[in-house]
Length: 116
Length: 113
Image (tube, rainbow over all chains, first blue to last red; front, top):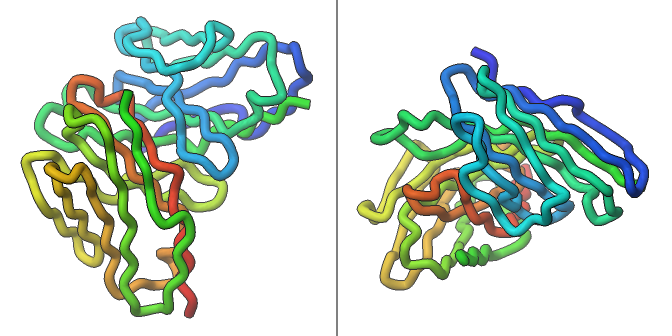
């Protein structure tokens, strides 16, 4: 059973450029959340997608946008990249049907974005 | 919004000793508290979780306790092994916003053989 798959694993971009990161959720999962993890810090919630719509959003500017496809996979787009956007971007998936079991998420290994 | 504080930031123990990591949260509406282990180059992996209607939960060498009144919860690892060395994160969320977890800043645990 494949877990959460993220691509690419590493990426180097120049300030001002745009980037798209991709995530395939774990089989059976329909909800995808994106997190940003700066070096030495805990993950910070960016937004969550369910039924192809953004359901919740953290304190991130509009430069961060996303999309969810009918097969539940998701993309994270960041425009006008800043040096401070350098971080590990994590995708986490879960099932909306998990009402009695754990609410925990399955995380991917992340995409390491470096902005130069 | 929710704020989660985690202590200590680094913890070094001898193999076989116990390790304790503590977290506090601010939002009394939070009712779900997972703990994640993150190894180098990998994403966080859920190792144990607890809900607000339970005071303690154990899974082999790992246990978590929750004090709702004081708004703090702790991770206990007994009989530590070198493979327990990793960064551990606590998090808090509500069932209604289960996708929006607030994480602590992590504890780097080193288990010396």
